[in-house]
Length: 444
Image (cartoon, rainbow, N blue to C red):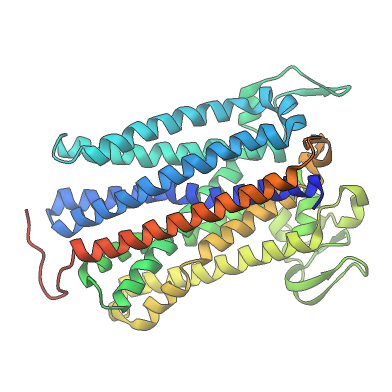
């Protein structure tokens, strides 16, 4: 493995793990806060138990997210010194603010975990809400920094120099809103369906039915609402990409030829040599409409992009199709679940619906990984779109391949530890909060 490939692989590996930890860390506090609210309003001890159980999960992912995020910050300087030399002073603002949000989140989480029976009950609940809000803000700020790489702003690039730097303009670049919206909703979809799927599995196993039913409903409602809104944010993102990064859109859709009334491609196998997509379903005019709001609008193809500036088509297209396909499946499941809540109440206890949720447990995070692949691979060969190439930003230090193997072992070990801790936590929930399904929990 050459050093350039090793550096990119190490960054991809680190981001791939961190994005899972950070999504859960952003969203789980809101689940926890809702359960805590129900406990305070109803005095139903099950909600208190759910809150405490979920708070332990929040603590686990906060710790792992902090570790993996710290590693990423070091990797930016270690692997991409050419990038950080110029980009650091420009897009450092969101990273600085993210550190502040992380600091607030840590304090609020400490108050929440150790505040039981020590604070006013509603103030205690409020500290949990702050954990969620600060975590969400932290994620949005990091995405704003990434959005700047896709839509550079806040500086003038003159003769290889970065002049007239405006950090606020860099942070609020043209891509930050669409990316932050899409990523935030995706975090709720992924975490909601993952948590709901785990509780659905416990219900099917007949363990602690009441506990898991209440937990399932909270997570499923969050995930289902987000899944229904996600296609709308996806449409906003697609229109934004069509304007700013036509090469990325062309790679996403495997759109080789510039044309009007461009067809939307579903599935298919791109063939860069023949400039065709085999075995695809094509819907005439739909890509033009989705990109520009007009079925006759012209959509730029890869033939309008210089060969050296074209992203890898196959990887980008397949990742995009996976993201959209899984998103549509989860949207269908969300609609079915709301039908079960409002019209077909007997569906809520049906095994087929619970099994559907169990099957959907990993879908959200697979879609998140695929979407992140589209964002990063679709921007290539640029690390700063249209300004700096990835090859010009990589470290000249030899031996990066060994670093890649080391960090792979570290992240795999970290993932194994997290899985073990969560597995143990789920079993502890069964031991501590075991209540027969037909017995109403006592109030304390």
